[in-house]
Length: 421
View 1 (cartoon, rainbow, N blue to C red):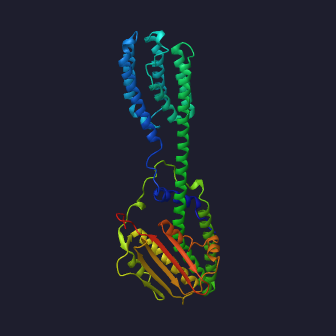
View 2: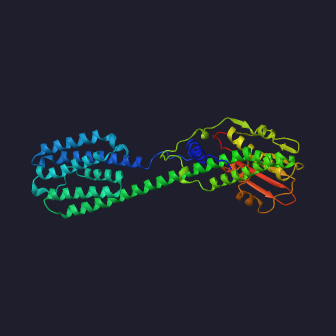
View 3: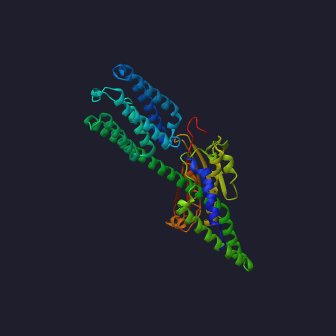
């Protein structure tokens, strides 16, 4: 078999999946966005608390002017760094380290500004703002950087007291538990988000492979099968051509089946945290399904439809009609040229669904034949019919009794009030 351009096909699958199928579920907001919003709010509240508290207690300090100078520095820093604390990408490590250094400066400076006799009863100049610095490290890097920031703050607290104080040990343990817990939650959330994004990309590749497999089945494979059949009938050189076409058909079916069974990581589209809606998800104009199905009418094929229009999105109507055409093709191929088929369109408002039934008077399908055909790479039922209906959010039921024909029931949900038809 000549080269099928596997690398090029995989690239095509990646590109198409990234453009369309991967858009079915959208990760509209990263899990980090609300966390950084919380950190930003805590920083502002911590700053406000430090300023208000110092305003009421500045008279008790030996050098209150230095305290006001420090709070002016802290206020300017917090306001200047507001844009940095909007996302992990913006909040660089040097910003966090500088923030922690300013916090430590305020803790140590408390010993210089206050009476040493009051250190055991007074909290430091930054007060609860120290926790904001720790939160930044935890959200940015996880529990390990958060724990490291807690250690730095705890050492500064003990230096400010000039000894290891139990109040500092108590506060340090609380900060350590909080910082590590938040950091661990952030790590788990990021891992979950990455796993979800990967699952969505795998689903995108799988759906795109199935769509391509349906298109190939409805065109290339059927042409190869026809060439094989007609070549055998004509004989001579045409028989050799038919034999080659048959070999290519078998090889192509095997290639498609292998690709559907194993969407490898190499076929994944580029990772992205925001799988936004693609053009396929945009509503398409409504068309009358009756018109599309009437186009399938032919000698031996009867179409019955209700008197009122059955309006569906153009894409939905096209896919549903293609599934019906695939069912008719199976009738022609397996029931013979003399078999008759009936297409019945039902618009059922009672159960909010549109139903298309395809029935024939052929010999029926032997038990287990559909499963065997799918394992052989024959995709007429597995993809061209069931795969299409699954992608439309519907279902395909196939019932057959040997000697009594086959009935295919295709059911799709009707859009609710206010949704595009």
